[in-house]
Every structure is written in structure tokens, then in C-alpha cells.
Length: 357
Ligand SMILES: Nc1ncnc2c1ncn2[C@@H]1O[C@H](COP(=O)(O)OP(=O)(O)OP(=O)(O)O)[C@@H](O)[C@H]1O
Image: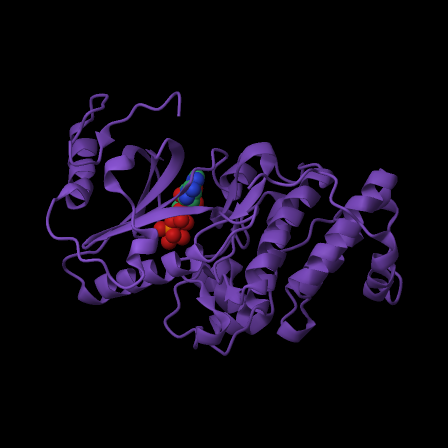
């Protein structure tokens, strides 16, 4: 909170704080915020009382990121550092406006029911068409994608790769245990908090498994998207496991998947030619085996997150006992059975310290 220069206070009392804004910034801030400050009638829909933000308690700071249809601002809500996602409905495109409203409602209703150290914490939301806002905890480390792209390729210590992978897998295991599919798991939607704790974020296209429907007209991100989803076929929780395999590859390489292709070319190569990003030549077997299983073209062959968490915990425990674990660990013909057979005895425990809630 300390170093923030607030440029806008969104409350009934108007703009109280501020550095000088550039004209562009000022126009943008005003054009977005006028909807939030307008005193007009605010009709609360069903269940809205539960999450509706008290706007007099909200300070909006500077914009620090953008999504396809959103802008993300830093802010303070009830004395807590927060991130505020502002979504604005375009006036000229009714279909998109309706889609964004539906997406907002769905994201809020899913976020409301979640509570886990590896899932972003929802704080409140506001609905003042044509602008909606979602307030979540602010994660100072930014996205995992940004973090990885600032590293030299292939040099993240394996211990850190393991810790980050385990955080993500635990968040996803919890999400699936709640019957929710994320459907857009990628390094840009994974945020870094204190102590390099990773939290899963952006539930804009997530759904309850029972209500997901087909993937027709789907807007996920091709480079991370499972082949059955690209083909708009029936899909299950296993689409997230596929995306996790790609994220694991990103953690090991620090690269963007299929960076020599357009997203559409990547989608075609994955779904019609079974293409996958190349594994590094020195990739420890323990990781290459897990990645290959996760991004298998047959969803049934992909492990569940329960198993992924167990495997990663086993690796963590083994690495603590033997610093050479990754270079000495070799596959046996029944490799995955070997790991799983060992798990109850190993009773692997996470020693990196849990993320703070
Ligand atoms: N709570 C937060 N703390 C820190 N950074 C955040 C937070 N929420 C979002 N961001 C940043 O903003 C970016 C976009 O956020 P988010 O993915 O939620 O928006 P979006 O509109 O759904 O984007 P898209 O539709 O393009 O996926 C993230 O990649 C991240 O860098």
C-alpha cells in the first residue's frame, strides 16, 4: 500500500487523492469510474447482497494490467490491498455485452464458493452496467507467465519448479474437488504472492462440471488448450490436466508454448497432428514422464490432480532426502505404479511451507 500513488477515489465523495494524470489516463479513469460513482438506482439482483461491494470503502489506484475485455487496477478496500478488475460492456456490440455480463455473473458465483491457499481470494464485486468490477486480494508478484519470461530459459532450479508445480496442482485439486473446471489454466492466470506462493486466478470461463455444456464458440487460449476442447468436443476436468502439462513445460523451459506458430497454427498442430512442445534434452525423467501423461491426447490416460499432487509430494520428499534425486531417478517398466505403490509408505509431506490464506 505504501508506494501507491492513488489517482482516483471512487466513493460518493469523489476524487480525493491524486497524482496528476496524463490526459489519456484521466479520460480513461473517468470514463470507467463515472459508472461506479453515479448515484443512480442500484437494483440488486438475487444473491447480490452477499458480494456487493461497499463503494464508499473502495479506493482505486493505477492500472497495472489488462485483459481482453478488462483493465486491472490496484486499490484498497476496507484497508486491504486489492486488485480491481473492471469490465466494461461495449455499447456497439450487444452480443458481446450480454456475454460479458454472463461471464461476470458466473465468475463471481464461482469465486464466492472458493477458499483455498492456492486459489485467489475473492473480496467483493459490483455491478453497475455497463461496468462491472471484481475485487480480489492483490498478489504483488504478478503473473507466473511474466515471472518466467524474465528468467533465462531452462534455468529455474528444479526445487523451485517443484514447489510452484505443487502449489498449482494443490489449487487445481481443490478446484476439481468442488466440481469446477477452470478451462483457461495458463501461466498468465497463475499469480505469485508472498514467498513465491502460486494462486490460481481468472475464473471467467470456468464452469461447474454439471453445467459446462459443449465448447462451441469457446474463447480459451489455444496454446494451452486440450485437443478435445479445440475440436469443440465433450470435455471433462481432464482439460485442466492437459493445460497443467503445458504449464509444467513452461516452468521447466521458461518459454511460450509453440512460440514459432500463431495460436491457430498451434491449435491445428495439437488437435490434428498430435504436436506438443519439445521437452528439453536434459529434462529429468521424473518431469518428462509426468508431462507426457498430463498432455496425453487421450483424456482417460491423464492423471487426476489427486495423483499429480501425490507424485509431486513424493518428488519433494525424495529431493529432500537425496539432492541428486532428479538425476538418478530412472523409469522402471511399471514406473507410474512404482511411484504410486510407494506413496502410502512415503507419506510425503510438503516441506516448503504452506501458502498463507
Ligand atoms: N489479484 C491480482 N493481483 C495481481 N495481479 C493481477 C490480479 N488479477 C489480475 N492480475 C493481472 O492482470 C492480468 C489479467 O487478469 P485476468 O486474467 O483476471 O483478466 P482477464 O480479463 O480475465 O484477462 P483475459 O480475458 O485476457 O484472460 C493477469 O495476468 C495478472 O497479470
